[in-house]
Image 1 (tube, rainbow, N blue to C red):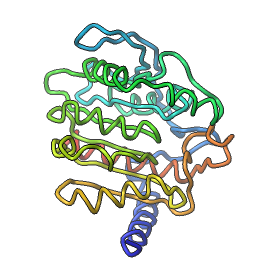
Image 2: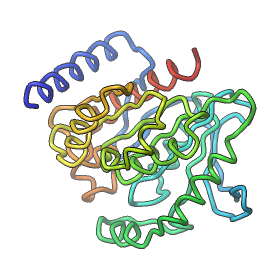
Image 3: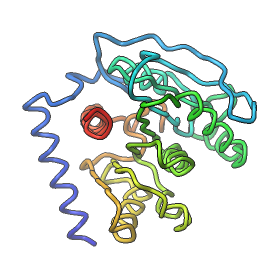
Length: 267
């Protein structure tokens, strides 16, 4: 396990250096307290109402071309739909993807860890499934490929969303999230799209999840990248009052996400 862990860190450093030198699909700069980084063609997002197939309504934040051939289902971290989540949706939208952030907290959000933990504990699992289905229902179009992206607590929900309708998803991305390695095997057996997991080397929960997934799901397409000396919530300025924020780790994360989505949905 230690050899695998060390190799993953080395691979990440080399790839990050290569992308930075060649400018491969990356954000040129990341500003302080910015989740998505600098982009000159950011598209403004907006809140809308969405429904699942049963007519249950929920709120979501959307951006990007409505006629895009790629749709991204974005699942927020435990703070909810914050400015960071909105920036992420607008960043994906600026890349030409129709992107929707489903609101698992029904209009509420937090600015501190304690408040965020309280919101996360109040989540209802059955209600979450309805909201995820509403997001999928909104993005569904003939010929459109979908990707699910989840940060932190939203990571396992991104995987769960993928498994709700695995035939229409082409990619799943989990950023410093865990728990997806604990999903029932009968459900994971349905996974047929590539998965990208990204985390920091100081973040034990998602590190262990990635190692477990590598060990237990050998037949799955799984890429696991570890950024050295980054801790949990490194892309969320609100986490720990910004003390964990890491601009360079955030920049590399966006490079990896953009490349992964492109190669699995646009080719």
